Amino acid sequence: MINWHTGHFVYVSFVGPECLKDKNTGKILGCVLFAPDSGEVINTVAVAMKTGQDYTFLRDFIFTHPSMSEALNDLFS
Image (tube, rainbow, N blue to C red; front, side):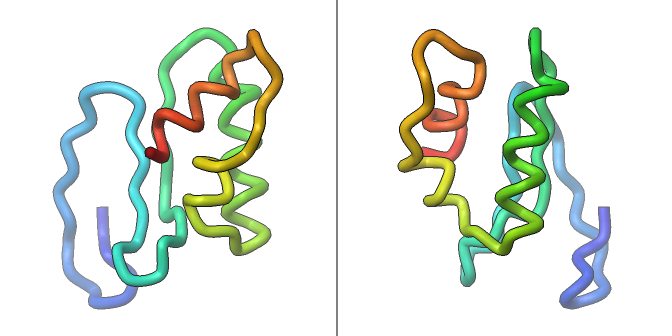
């Protein structure tokens, strides 16, 4: 993976659901999900990224229960 701000390579090891966020701005840079319904949940993350939200948007959002998307609260905590 390359850091587009500096042009340097960043090596990331993914173990489970992972979120890559900018420490300075809080912007979500990427997300990896491997779970049932992850194809639907990743779209929620993509909308947050495309609208310029920072990670706290998904961390503090109230999702319906029970749903897979409510796991985003834990992922971005």
